[in-house]
Amino acid sequence: AQSVTQLGSHVSVSEGALVLLRCNYSSSVPPYLFWYVQYPNQGLQLLLKYTTGATLVKGINGFEAEFKKSETSFHLTKPSAHMSDAAEYFCAVTTNTGNQFYFGTGTSLTVIP
Amino acid sequence: KAGVTQTPRYLIKTRGQQVTLSCSPISGHRSVSWYQQTPGQGLQFLFEYFSETQRNKGNFPGRFSGRQFSNSRSEMNVSTLELGDSALYLCASSSAGIGTGELFFGEGSRLTVL
Image 1 (spheres, rainbow over the protein chains, first blue to last red):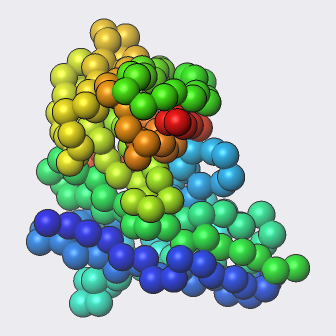
Image 2 (image 1 turned 90 degrees about the vertical axis):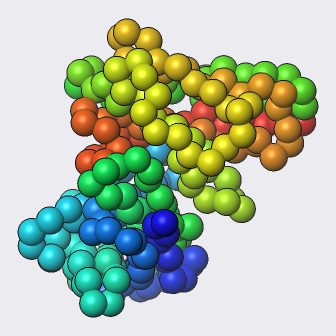
């Protein structure tokens, strides 16, 4: 069975500060990991994904995430927060058999001017 | 390239009724998957259709069903609505399926059950 845990349902950062959103997974097989962002009243948009290869993954809008197998983590970071980053962020996992897709419970990011 | 289109965007139903939601995927995408989003349960996978066949299914009762047409458009049906079915229903399209994780989402259909 697979699951995804996002620590912190709400995170607030000041504009220009580091953004760190935490995600841990449990998977019995090598996972594929994703971060999605949801702006108010919109669907989800893929930020970045890890399947195989380089463990540091760069995505859109300056976000990146590092796959750490030893820690079963896939935390999302951005060096400097912008007001436009305020949104809900979802970590997700599947495997290469791809028969299920699991989302974390989401982290709401607030950026304080 | 047009995105994923879901209709209707908002609807209100009463308990016991049924509802049908529609999803038009990105042109060329053969996979359509459906998700239920609620404040309490978060985002939950309902099912995936690929080339008119249900390929994967989440853990939802049989009241939730779907189908996909030859043009890849998909419909989701919920019968005998319950209050707990109130949610945002999202569909996503993909060229290769949910295993790739490259899902393109529509804006959702917000269902309210009274």
